[in-house]
Amino acid sequence: MRDLLAEKRRKRNSAVAGISWVQPTRYLPVMLLALGVWGNTLASSSVNDLTALGQQRIAANQQAQKTIEAIDDETDRMETRWLQQMKQLEGLKVYNRILLNQLDEQQREIAEINASIERAVDIERQVIPLIDRMITGLEQFIRLDVPFCR
Figure 1 (cartoon, rainbow, N blue to C red):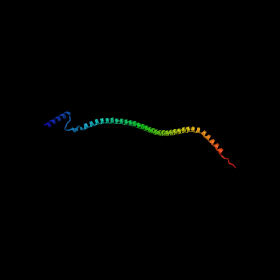
Figure 2 (figure 1 turned 45 degrees about the horizontal axis):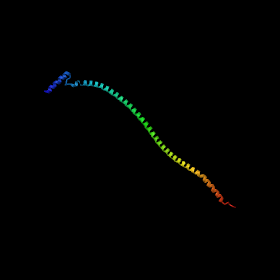
Figure 3 (figure 1 turned 90 degrees about the vertical axis):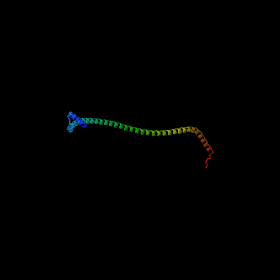
Figure 4 (figure 1 turned 45 degrees about the vertical axis):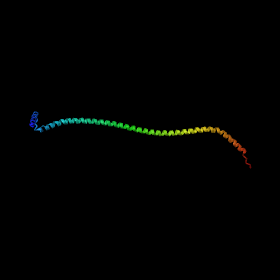
């Protein structure tokens, strides 16, 4: 019984709407055509919007890539400069070590020369008495020497 009542309600509602439940395929092509035209319009506008959005993203990504490449190039230049400066610093360290060794050697030589100068003063003081002793010794040798006779 419920099935009969439900069937009557359906018929009444479909009669009000002008659509028969018995032949729903009659209006299906018209509905599909309307949906297709409306959907195509929506799809084309959304495709255009999506295409424009995609192009904007591509342009933004290209600009970002250019920025990244510029930063990368600057980083490479800075790294190269840093490596050159580190190499120069190592060269200067070696040069300073060599100069320090030379300076130490020169200070040793200065100390030796100063010691020689102090000894030279002592030697100078002893030269005159040495010459005097040598002259005395020579005079004594001459006096004691026997001349050669022929």
